[in-house]
Image (cartoon, rainbow, N blue to C red; front, side):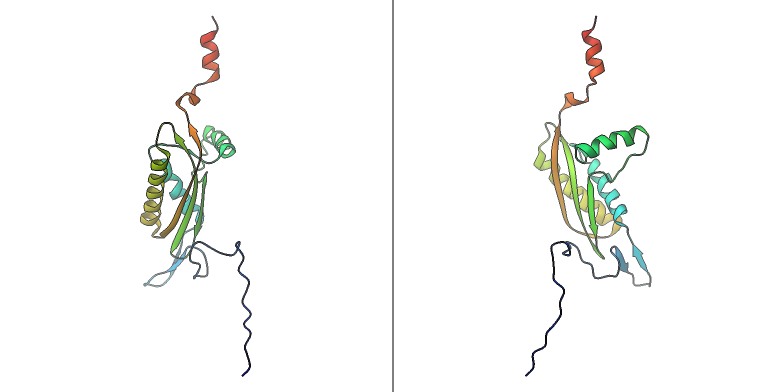
Length: 159
């Protein structure tokens, strides 16, 4: 008997996906009435960003540099609702990674759990995608005194 050799592509960590990629395009799903609906990753990221911001105890999304750049965007009314959010969208599934800042003294583990629930629920309800995972990275804690302006403090010291 002759043995058959199969040429299978090597799977590297970069090619492994967390979500199903059965369809021809990410976010494309077939319907019974014919046709397809494609939901862009940016749409799912925006849904996740809005849902996360609505959770009590979440002060902001994104890392320090992203928040600084976001403050400039906010000043010119160009808020980026996807700041601090990365998503992967497959045919019927989605996965999300969020970076958040928690308000002090909120319990970090509870805020993160609430963010997971809110984001998964919003993506499922609005986009109709099964959420396979929501990873939450807490990279800072916002202290109430951090909002004080240095100018205001200097004025109160000067007679």
